[in-house]
Length: 127
Image 1 (tube, rainbow, N blue to C red):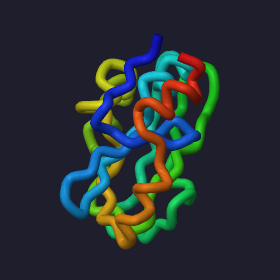
Image 2 (image 1 turned 45 degrees about the vertical axis):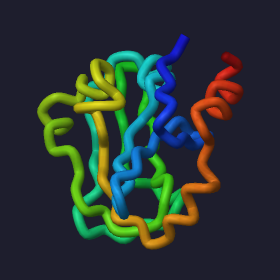
Image 3 (image 1 turned 180 degrees about the horizontal axis):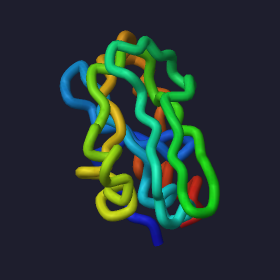
């Protein structure tokens, strides 16, 4: 059973969002990292990049496949998690902590209402 944290919001593409004032910190869910298996490379978005909800932020490459990571909200990428360049396995070890991917300054916080609650995400997973 995947770890789903109640304080986060989720996308149908298995990204999570933690809201910190006007910043949406995001990454991939525990379910996503389990499905990908051993993550070996992460392509991160550049700081200052403008994104719309649903845009491709980067890629996560595992020994099995390459998966696109989508922006859960619209805004500007304030920072990317540079630790993932040298330690992509942080996505496997700590997907909700040290394995965050990007922090996005939201241009429309109302978009958060379109994301799933933990309960809704668990239903999506069939848990």
